[in-house]
Length: 338
Image (cartoon, rainbow, N blue to C red; front, side, top):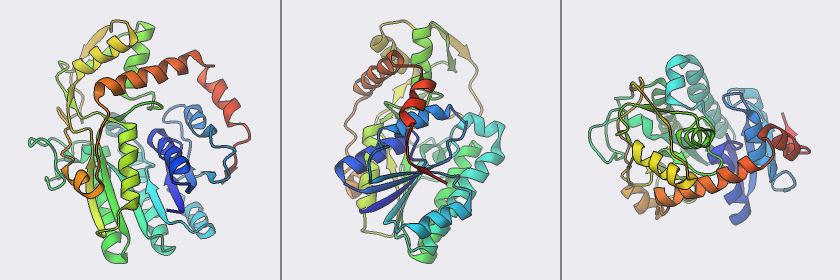
């Protein structure tokens, strides 16, 4: 893989993928990111700052819904693949503002697929979500399960994205792999996500919100395992279209997750019980047998090890300069276009 376009590449998963492709694959990596204010853009600037002097790395500040910008970028450089990770994320915010999710997650995906078609970019990897399974009573979730039970606008937009990928694969011969991610966590995790938010609140002595009785179970997947799955999907050439789960293949109750954070941080959590939230599901659990068969995928980081590694990173970040100042310093001189 010589040249890869990563949308959302300044974010959590995207920046880790860029690290891997540059370090291990010697690929040329172009990142497109809008640096929107869903969370502090300084966090993203810090994520990408380490590559500012790498001649094989390029950062383009653009919105994936800007068809002209994406068209110009794809006309300028011959990409071997697109990894489409840019999206408006979050189940609960999508309930409050569904139209922005449709615009970014659906329209933006069509913009990328059109660019791939027009410029004969042969391979697309689409970042989907376990949320497409909705309230699925069959566990673990497998790719053949019915997905007409989405219970949030976010989930519905990911179903629509997968459908668009299938259409473009069928009509235009694009090779597309849709990857359903299951609760990704690890260093650089977004500050609004549970593990990061809980760790911060525990150390600050602030209560953490627990929606329901703490029995909700999630298939937490360490970011290194997810990135291994994405890289394998970039290498995959056997069939023209696939949907594949990438998860940790085990579930952890919310209350157990909190216990692990307490142990790693050396401090007890203050719990604030709240009613279950609209759009939340009681369990996510990935059947990864297909990923094992197609990609030799092997999620090897247990939740115990992964939480400890996250907390090590989290403590280091807190000892560093305030994120806004640090990110501005680190990002100075970063080559940007657009």
